[in-house]
Every structure is written in C-alpha cells, then in structure tokens.
Image 1 (cartoon, rainbow, N blue to C red):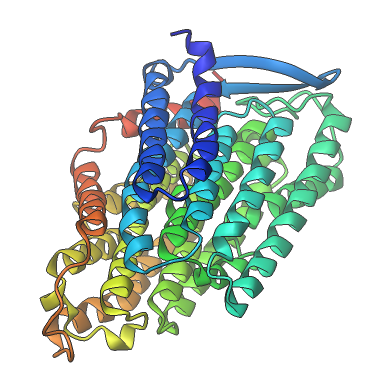
Image 2 (cartoon, helix red, strand yellow):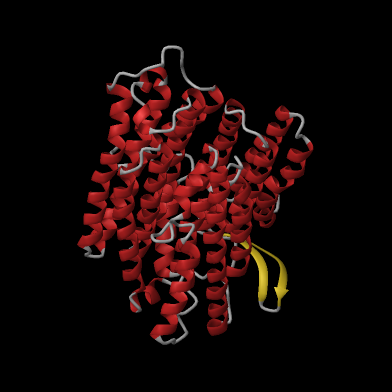
Amino acid sequence: MDLTLVPLLAILTSLAAVPLILWSSSKPNLRETWTILAALVKFGLVLTLLPSALKGESVTLHLFDLAPGLPFALNADPLGVYFAVIASGLWIFTSFYSIGYMRGAGEDKQTRYFASFAVCLSATIGIAFSANLLTFILFYEILTLATYPLVIHKETEKAIRAGRKYLAFTLTAGLLLIAAAGMVYTYTGTLEFTPSGVFTDVDLPHNVILVIFILFMGGVGVKAGIMPLHGWLPSAMAAPTPVSALLHAVAVVKSGVFAVIRVVGFVFGTDVMAEYGLNDILIILAGTTIIVASLLAFAQDNLKRRLAYSTVGHLSYIVLGVALLTPLGMQGGIMHIAAHATMKITLFFCAGAIYVNLHRENISNLNGIAKAMPWTMAAFTIGSMGLAGIPPLNGFVSKWYLALGSLEGDMVLPLVILIISGLLNVGYFFPIIQRAYFRKGEGLENYGEASPFMVVPLFITASLSILFGMFPNLFFSFFDLASSIAKTLFTGV
C-alpha cells in the first residue's frame, strides 16, 4: 500500500462506517459489527505509520487547495502518529464497552450514538494528521459538531442544557481559533505547522504576538480544559459514560491538549515562546488549573463529576510540561497524553459499570461495592493510584519526567505544584477506594460484575496502565517517540 494514502484512509474508515451503521439500525448485532470493524481497520492503518514516525519521518498528502496558498493537506508526523495510535487504539475498547453499556442501560437512539461516535473518531484522526492550521480547524470544528449529539444523547432537560453550554464554549473557541489563524497568515504568509515555529524570521511587536497567543489559547484552551475555560466539561457529564470516556480520554479534551502542543511547538516555536515570556503565562494558567481543579474535585459527590474535575487538572499537567520549554518537560507532557488516556478511560469505564449494574452514581452510595464488583474496583484502584503518580503505573513515569523537566529549567514552582497535586489526587481518590473496600454495603447481596463487554475492556485498560508504567516502550515505543518529538521541537529537525 502507498503510505501517502494511509492518513486519508485512516480518516475515512470510520466515516465510511457511518452509512452502514445507519442502514443496520434495526439489526443491533450487525450495527455494532460495523463499529468494531471500523475501529480495528483504523487502528491497523495508523499502526502502518508507526515505523516511519519512529524514524522521525512524516507521511504527507496534499489533497487540494481551498484557495491559492491555502492547501487542504495531511501530514502524519511523529506527534500526529503518537496521538492517532492512542485515539484509535482506545476506540476499540470503547466500542466493545459501548455495546455493554448501551444495552445494559437500555439507552434509546443507539444507532445515532454509534454513528456520531464514528464521525468523532474520523475528526480526531483528521486533527492528528492535519498539515496546517486550516486543515486542523476544519477537523477541530467537525469534532465539536459530531460530539454534540453524544452530549445531549439522553435528551433530558439537563442533557440539553449541557449540550448548549458545550456548543457555546466550543463554537466561540472555534471563532477565536479562526481569528488567530488569520493573524498568523497575515503576518507570516503561511499556515503550515513547522517544528521551529512560523515566527522565527518575523519581527513582530510584543503586543501583536501577545494578542495572537491569547486568541490561540482561547481557541484551544476550551477543549484543553484550562481554567476558566473548563466550565462545559463537568456539565457534559450528563452524557452516557462511554461519551464521558470519549470526552476525557480518547478524543475531545485530548485534541485540546494536542492543539496546545501544536500551537506552542509548531506555530510559535520554543524560542519565540521564551523570548516573549509566553510560557510564563501558560505556567501560571496550568499551575492554577491543576491546584484549583483538584480542590474542586473534593466537593463532588457525583462520581463522574469528581472524575471530570480530575481530568481538568490532569490536562494541565500536559500544558505545564509544554510550558516548561525544556526537552524533559516536553517529553513528560507528551507522555502524559498516553498515561492519562489509559488511566482515565479505566476510571470512567468503572463508573459506567457501577451505574449500569447497581444504578449508583454518587460516591456516598458506594460502600462495600468491592465485594460485589471486585474486578471493577481493582481496576478503579489502579487508575486512581496511577493518576496520583504512584509507581509502577504509567502516571508515575510521565510525572517523573515532568519533575525532571522542572529541574532542568531550574524552576521550583512547577515541581511544588506537581507534588501538591499528587497529594491532592490521593486525597480525593482514596475515600472512594476506602468506601468500596472497608465499609459495609447494603443491598448488594444479589449483584456481581457487570457485562463482560464492560468488565473486559476496563480490565485491559487498567492492565495497560501497569504495563506501560513498567515498560514505557512496550508495543508502540511511546517513550522513544515522545523523546524524539520533544527533541525535534527544540532542534527544528
């Protein structure tokens, strides 16, 4: 197969499954078969790009020009392939999990759900493989619109309200992103993603660079959950749990932090970020978000909302790693994309299994559930401890490199933030585990684990969190890839 076509095929695979899913609406088994097949094929296609990425090479495809000098083009560079492997790989587990959840919860409009999910994954891979800001923005906005039916899936008043809030935040962010891209093109004549940035040969006043940066952060900061742009995220927990997993681990918020890396490393460049002090702004925003989100998590009795605030905080670990402007810090931030993905998807899978099986959503009602659902709570414990940075889980590895990045840049404050945040993580996760294992439950006598469609995926993702913690290069060479990407952002090659 011609590798140049693979990025396009990877995008189109799940999109091609949409009409098949809609056509099979009256045959659930066939409908879900199309979903699984599309997920497997997409992942297989993305993996064919991994050897090139590990060599530091990119696979480029120019499709057409929307206007002179404005190409619609794809570029599967190492960073894009890294993100695409994570998103497409976890979609497989989410697809199996969704079957158990949607059927177990008796959800309506399941066909619309699976079709929207497929479009979301096409948009996510499009974001990963965008060669320039124009292509990126198009896929970024497609992801926004495709996620909306998933957020309002239950069509309750609460869900509709959450959907409106989601659109208000994300569509406004899209306008800011367009404005930022317009200013970049005006001053540089290009929208291409360049490892050293596009401003290296352009002498701009500080206030102009600052305005462009603020527009970009407003544009990508919403999906990245940077405070105070995070408000839509806890509200979106009105959606079914697999959607929460999509929002928090696979696509939407990961697209946001991926966009932060693209903007910092491939639009501004590390030299310009340092010269104009833009990284200091990011460090303040990220550090504040990490601490405040962790404190807000303590106040949430609803399990999914506590996990949501945890996500807000952990997304800013990635932003903080980028803002450190050190190779080790950047590597730690990039590694945390994968680490957080496996751990947080595990936690949401567990929350969904508990809801479908026991119809319990609040932490105060989880007393003794480990006896009824031992596999689920074991996985939850693994995910929780990983997010707290306890070895040998993959959350420890990424946080270790974030800490090394802080020391590499002679910055004490980010290191202090990481330590405090780790303690806060233990603080808001441990009470859940303590309730599940050490308190007596009621009304659990006739209950066991949820459907294998749900338990097997959460067990696998929890196991991956352990395996990637002990062997960071296992399967996909994520460690080497993250290290290579980080070095490229500082050398430009």
